[in-house]
Length: 374
Image 1 (tube, rainbow, N blue to C red):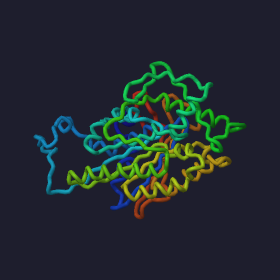
Image 2 (cartoon, one colour):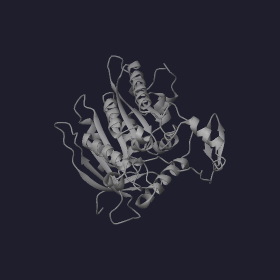
Image 3 (cartoon, rainbow, N blue to C red):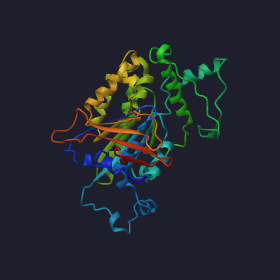
Image 4 (cartoon, helix red, strand yellow):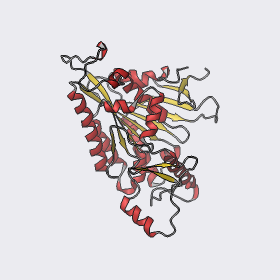
């Protein structure tokens, strides 16, 4: 069993050690897939921990003023040696900065401090309206006399809003013509979409932290330009300190963008964007949904595009980590199954040992990973 606040030992070869074995100048792609009831959130947090823990500034570094020399030898910079530093860019479409900040604190990371030192940056994909423009939204709300009452939120000032304690804001399920069927056997998908959207509403929208960038608009062009600009900023910060930067790009639920974009964006266009971004970073980690109806059925446009997107990325990936529920049903001490398989993009000369483990996510956010029978 593993300590609840560190990387589980059984997963260490796939979260940390594997990247140390990568050949020089090799851009790695890792895909993590989850389903309803088996979220990839805990896995993303462990990846953040594996890349950022060594870069976390100590309390002495946090309290030291800019330009002030440290009295601790291990914190002094050797200007005659060019070192390599790892920075992480996290882009999330379903969770806000507060969610990731609180989750990261449980695994020993201070994202605010890391952002201030140029080791971490966050791109907010939750605030941008993926379903319709802000102008059309305001126009619709002013002209629709049958609009539902406003959600029970309180103004925080400066544009921020938070939910009133104990009350869940009512968020209408977006209707995307031609994308989410609402009849027959697909009714449950609409319910699942409603569940997902209300989970978004339930996530507290906190104040943006340092190093946070918001997407300007729900366009593929702006998405690529925003990510590229933040990557350049992270690399520039490292260069200013006389260091070489390795940037890790972590994108949470990019498939949500694909579903919300409707006919305006295809899976092939989104994959091409990822290929372009991979040339600018050292490692890319994607967390995607892989529910069976979205990957296997392929009867609706959404299912076909989603399946093409996920399967194409799995083929290009160096490694795929798949989360699912137990085949035998719910167990009190087991949250699900994590299966590690080699993708179609394993670098020449490398090998990935394929395994399948059970895992349990505790109420405090701690994760235990163990083999069957333990």
